[in-house]
Image (cartoon, rainbow, N blue to C red; front, side, top):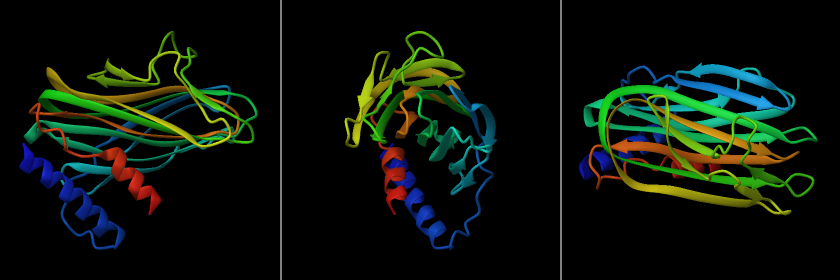
Length: 243
């Protein structure tokens, strides 16, 4: 559906530009609520909260903020988009996080975001993920961990509350080695035939002392196998942060 794809991209950029200039006056629906479930082993405990976001058009919602009760042990900020367009059987959940370990010991994180949508019937899905590790006082690592279960991937994508696909599986490590280092991966267009009512992204990782990790990615489904270019959430949010 190329026409729908182009319309989505234009509406995102028009809405973002208008909002940044204080010109956003188009009528929009209420934001789509995203639920957060954050658990940290080694400091800080758990945080469970929801964010209704800021709608930027009838199907797109922007989220930005920090965890409601920041821990001195770590800091976590987020910035991403979601799309809920059941009329066109299209939906996207983004992930944009910056996580800092403020302690002198390793911390293990489990970050789950979910949102209800649709119901929609998808014929294809795709996912991507990217991480950047900024070194602290010493060489550090960002890696998978068994602290929340055996052999968990760093990125897990869920549909209707059940694990669906993964990227950066068990035993993965990204090392800073004194300089900023990054890695990325993607799941190409893959057929799917199911009624989707919830999307989720879970990040599970071990972060060494003093490190700052940035995560960007998205999980999207579309009604036709050839219509993939709905919305590059990771690219959009990366450019937005650099402005």
